[in-house]
Image (cartoon, rainbow, N blue to C red; front, side, top):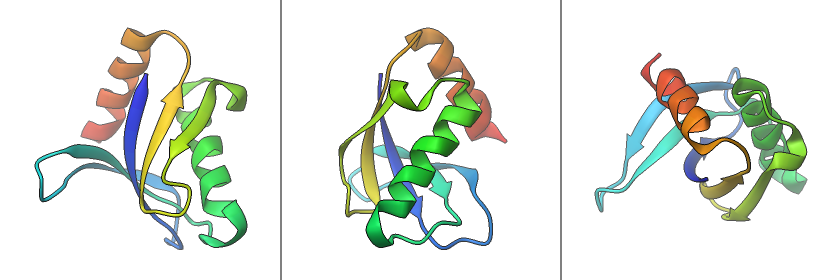
Length: 93
């Protein structure tokens, strides 16, 4: 599955804060990361965090686009329906 994620680096803690609706109507999972955006640290923190909350290994997650942008496309390998259900549950919190 491919997931759009809107990242806010340098937050006080790493967490999913919900779903962000962009001005063009597209939606993305909104995530705050404690890591800074320098030297790919935020990207690695995002991959680690998503792996932890979704219960998949780091090798199952890759950054498809947005390495230096707030909006990122992330590819997650695994059981698509189960991953989608888990993401929906996390976004509602």
